[in-house]
Image (tube, rainbow, N blue to C red; front, side, top):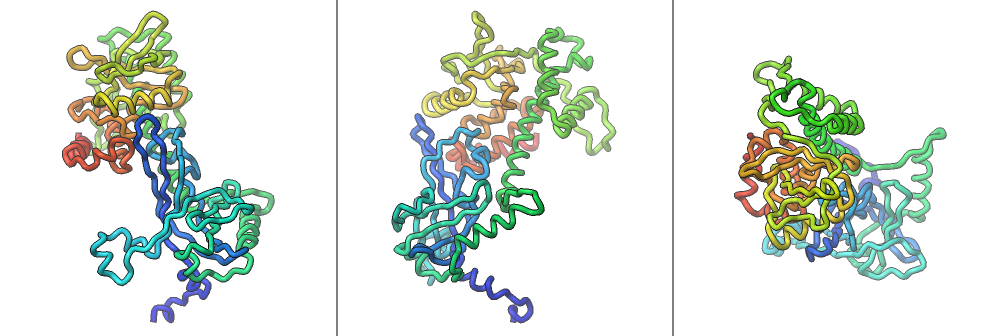
Length: 428
C-alpha cells in the first residue's frame, strides 16, 4: 500500500538491499599517558558492484577518515592528534549490536559484524579479508571502498550491479565539481554541520579571549577609577590584540560587554543581563612564557615573566590536577601546545593570596583555561562562583568534555556527583 501511495524508485529499492551500516573507530596515541582515546562515527556504505574480483562500496569520506574534513574537529585535540589506526566496523544491523547481548541472542537477527582495518588504496597490493582499501578524491567527501571477495559480511550482500563503478563515480565527481568555469568541493551535510559546530565552539573561545581583554580595558571606560590604571604599554597591547581577534560578530560581544560594564541597557527588565561590576583583573601581564618545569607541585603554572622574574599562577575556574597521571597529562599537553608561545595573563586575586589567571595565547587565539577543560584534562572549580558567572564559557567547556568523554572526562562522566555539579553551575 505504501508503495502505491508513495512510489519508490527501483534503483532506491536496490540500493536499500546493497546498503550496510558502519561505524568508524579511530585510535589516538596519547603518548606518555599510556591511555588510548577512541573516536567513532556512525555511517553507511552502498555496495555498487565488483571490479577485478573485489566488491566496491561507496561512502562519505567523513565516515572513513576521522581526520576529514579537519583534525581540528576532534574535541580532544587542537591539531595535534596522533591517529595511529582507523578501522571500519561493518554491520548486518548496527541496532542489534547496540542491544544488550542477552536480548540480542533471543532475536532472530543477533549482532553480526566484521572489523576491517582501513588502509590507503593501492591497486597493486592484494586485498586481505580483514582490510579495506579507501580511495579518496582530493578534498571531496567521497570515498570508494575496496573489499576482498573473501569478506563474507560484504560478499554475501547484493550490490547495485553497476558494471564500472569506479569510472561512474569518477565521472560523477568531475561533472558535479566543475560548473560553468567554477570549481566546487563536494561536502556532505553531516560534515558541513560538524564544521559549523566547530566554528561555534571556537567562537566561545574567542568570546572568552575578548571578554578577558575587554575587562582588562576597564580603566579606559572609567570603571576602575579607584584602582591603579594599567601601564600604557599593556593597554596598547590589549587594544591591538582585540582589534586583531575581533571579527564583526565577535566585536559585537565586546560592545555588549562594555555596555554591561557601563550599566547601559535597552533590554526589557526580565531580559537584562547581570552586570559584572565586582570581578575585574588586578593587572595584565604580557610576553610571559612557560618555564621548563611547567607545573608546580600544587598543579599551578610556572611561568617566566622576564629573564630574572618568575611567577606562579593557577588557571581561573579550574581545580588543580591530581599528582600523577593527571598532572603528567596536563604537563604533556602544555609542552605540546604552548611550550614556546607568548602568554598573556589576566590576573585575579584568589583566596589566601593565591594568584588566579585567565591564560591567553593571543597569537594562536587560544584561551588555555577553556581548552584544558574542553580536553578533559582538569575539572571545573564549581566553588568559584564569581569566575563562572563572569566566564560561563568555562562551564560550556566542561560540559563538552563530559559529553564527548575526552581525556579524563571519560571517567568523570560516570561520576554522578561531578556531572550534577557541572549541570548546576549552568544556573549560576
